[in-house]
Image (cartoon, rainbow, N blue to C red; front, side, top):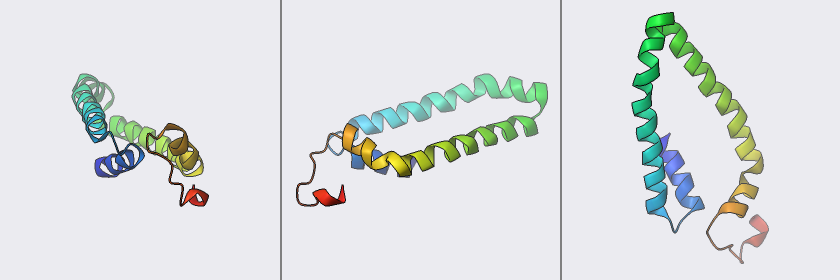
Length: 94
């Protein structure tokens, strides 16, 4: 998943590969270290099955909400926020 996000972000921001890499690595690091602070006590309280089940439900719910939105509005989002100059030859594809 990280490779696909990194590739997509580099396509959207081709002149900023260092910034893209730094932001993605920061998110991965902060997310990875934060898990130990809430998951272990939560698992001890309600059980690992419920903990991982709820986390799975959250991930699936976000996926169902975000992926169709990106497929529907992705072109407009890239057009609005990309730092890449528009391609004048293939303007009809945008």
